[in-house]
Structures are given as C-alpha cells and as structure tokens.
Length: 388
Image (tube, helix red, strand yellow):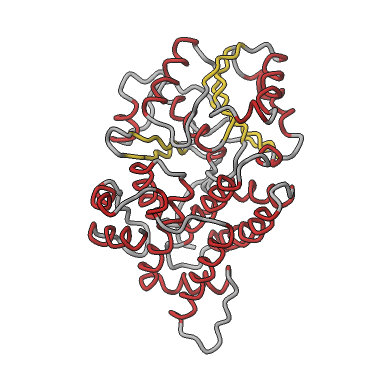
C-alpha cells in the first residue's frame, strides 16, 4: 500500500431500528430554527414525518418546511432553499429522505452566507466555502449515495444540461446521521435496486484503480460481496431487516472516504452517468448501471490484473485452464447476470437517451485521470453508443 493520506470522518452515526430517538440527543446542540428538508411527501404517508415533527416540537424547535426536493436537485431548488434559510435565519438543516435530500442540504449549507453565485462558485469553479456554513443533519430513508457520511453534493442545471458533484471537506459533512433500515422498507423496488447499484458502483470506482497490494481493495471486495448477497435477498423480500440493514451499512462505508485511501480512484462511470442524467433526468443508479459494462469492458485490457482479481474474489470464477482475459471477462459476465437478475436498467435508451444526444452527452462528460485508461472524447462517444 503506497498512498500517503490522512483520514477523519466528522459525522456521528446512529444506526438501528431505534435510532430515531437519538435525534433528542442532537437537537439541543443547535439553535431554535430548523429547516426541515424532504422530497415528494412519501414520509408523510409512511409516518416518518409525524415522528420527526413530534421530536422537533418536543425539543422546542421552530419548524421551517422545505419540501419538494427532487431526485436530481436543481439549481432553481437550491436557490429556493437558500432563500428559505436566509429569511428564517435557520440554525440547522435537517434532511429527511435519500441521498438527494442530503446532497441538497449540504449545497444549501454552504450557500446561505455565500456572497457569490453558488452554482458558479462551487460547481463550475469548484471553489471551497469561505463563509459561515449552516450545520446539516440527516435522517436517511433510502440507502445508496452514502451522502449521510460524506461531503458530496450533486446539483443539476437543466438550462446548461449539466449535472455536477462537488465533494466538500469535513466541515460540510453532516454533523449527525440517523440510519434506521426500516425507514427504507416502503421504497418502490425500482428505487431500492437503483440505490443498490449506486452502492456497488461507488465501490467499483475506487477499486478499479492502482496496481499495488492495497488494504482498501480487500475491504472493497468484502463490501461488494455483501451487497451482492443482500441484494438477492432484498429483491425477493424487501422487508428482510437483516438484508436491508446490511445494504444500508454497506452504502455508508462504500462512500465515506475510507476505501478510497491509498487509491487514485476512477469515477468515470459516474461522469458518464451524470452526463446522461443531465440530459434525461433519469434515476442516478440506473444511469450508472446503463453505462457500466460498456465502460468496464473497454478498459479491462488496461487493468487486466485487477479485473482478474475482481472475477476471482468477488464472483468466484473458476480459473483452471483459462487465460487471464477469459477469467476477467467471466467476472464481468457474472456481474451482468447479477445486474439483470435484480432488475437494473442495462442501456441508456431505456432512460430516454437517443443517438442524436450522444455528442452533447460526451461534451458534458468530465474526463478524469485516476483509472486505468484516460479516455478521449471519441472513446467516450463509442462507449455511449455501446450503451444505447
């Protein structure tokens, strides 16, 4: 393991089926005005909203509602949330929902006291906050993004066909997050499965980089095996608590920065998927699943040793009598079989992408350098065409 790094995670987690009660321990640490952030209203149907509001009122908080956070939060919604926070002098941003709500809350947190245009400052110029940051807390209702324990925030700008993520530092990470696996039970199957693949691909993006013997890779392999095992149980019985709790915990560890340590990391699948999402507004996890295999099959020869290891350690491919390339290919075939079995989208045309969008999507795809092959625009176009 050759990397030089420091590691700290600033988020306190409460995990389990009684974890919501610990909101009572956290609320006294913050001021009176709480901006309650949530999405389309599903938390009002499943009772989570009422339970949270009851705790907020019991702690004497003023509740300022900020509803309607969409799956791919927009610049317009960000501006709306900033306006709400400023007008109400909020002391805490409490996100109740999935990764989009958590991402949105973090984007609002660094924008409330920002004198510049947040989109330009954070998502175009990738500058860091120099202003006061409003603290964030998360109550998770969907497992996938890992946003509950990292500094990431992804915002979409439909006017420019851009979907961009900024990973902020520890000062922007949620101060606390509450993870109750039962809160994920009411998710539609498609959303659950999209979240599962988001988890798996977060791990892949970090795993498929570097050539040294790295402890982070051993951790990644264990997490991938856990996700595959639990996903097959969860798609058959979405209320299997053990499976859903393992999926939720794997999601957190997949992207709380631990398994990236000592790694260059790749993230090109996310760059491709986010560019597709900017054009189609499709579910994030499904944009990743639709572009993954064409990308990995293309770069496999450049990172053959790691793809062989992936096949052997994660998918238990039998190596006897096979070349390294055959072993690696069987690993990706096994991954494809699993993806289809749990019901993932396997091409971008199903998400609304068309051939005449390919050039524009390629133009909006950031090219990163951490993986086994630095892509050219022409290669990106070919991968996108293979994903149709």
